[in-house]
Length: 548
Image (cartoon, rainbow, N blue to C red; front, side, top):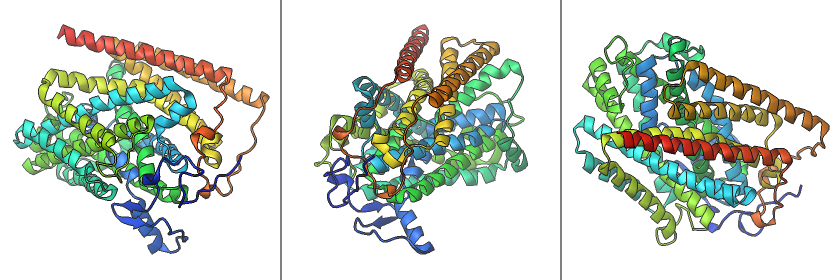
């Protein structure tokens, strides 16, 4: 393995860093680190200043995932099942960290976006597929963000059309300043606004001891007859908390912020801060909605986020309802920020369009045009759609995210084991074992979700059979790879010395990854599953719309 040392003044000479916009001073919302500031950080003050300058990617990607869809999902869990599903949030913490840590490592080390890496390392089919499915999923997700705006505006007594137009204008204007730092300041301010859920929680005052118990004690509400409905809510929580767009967003945002491997531990701290805030917010939402509807006719009768606000008002007063609506509005806007950027970054990365928030509109017209078009079209669709079609789109987003998430995680795992890409930063055995188990669980949940959409009356017994079949297949696959690894030729151990100065060489200089028979078979199976699952879901959605 040949180490490539990054010369900060000549970023494109020997590394894959895209252009001069992606190299320079780190200009964060809360501080700046000059390019020539290579001094070691000694003392608490110096480390804190560095952390404040780095904070942004992990915080925004995590809080952005507590968006309008998350309000509905966590609210549904609380209103229908109380706090009995809180444990799912604790189980998701290591999944969130491992997935996003791998992504930030890819961004800091390679300087190349997620979609571009998939295109270059796995071919045109998967590269095109990753961009097309991301574009479709993000476009629909953007519509759900504006649906959240209409729900919040309706509760607050504001005109819905004007609220959607104003929200779209704010989202577009914040990115069109031509300053990465100004955009991040707006985004971080919105992230701080997500903490409004804490005072709402205090006003509603759920039983903290019961929440603490349910947070660490797994359990399933109801009996076996409710298994299918409960499993769908759990899958929705997973799909809401671990979304495919997060992978594309954080990798590109880390690159755009000019974060290099020497700041890896600070970026990991940023990620942990974001995870803490998102878990606190999700738990607070489940807890306060559970308390608001407990013992009322509304318990178990979830409809939408606006109804949640009315239930909270009935429990804790008008102020609590207003704060909840404002928090929903804030979440919808920060979610729209992140989803729009992830799409514009990915398209720019794959098609060679200049894409950076450090550039003004004149210097990156295509990038800003894609961003503005996405936001504008999503806002227009929201205004022109009916309540029924909005509900159908919201359902389609959840299902599509569930279907696509396993493939996104598979490519993430493969890229993080590609020595040509990550060199001394490749995964270790424990990360690979954990992520492989996560992939198995995600595939199982994805299959259950797809089956439940195609066959709405699916029985609990069928779900158990799917889980059992996937479990057996996972054990057999693990056994195969374990035995083949012991009998095959072992790779040389990874030399991790000097990795803080290692960056990926230009993509065109890398050897293509070897495709073993097992990998080809696995990729073929993944392709077949995705095509079949997406076709079945699309047919079901069309049938539902036509029947209505």
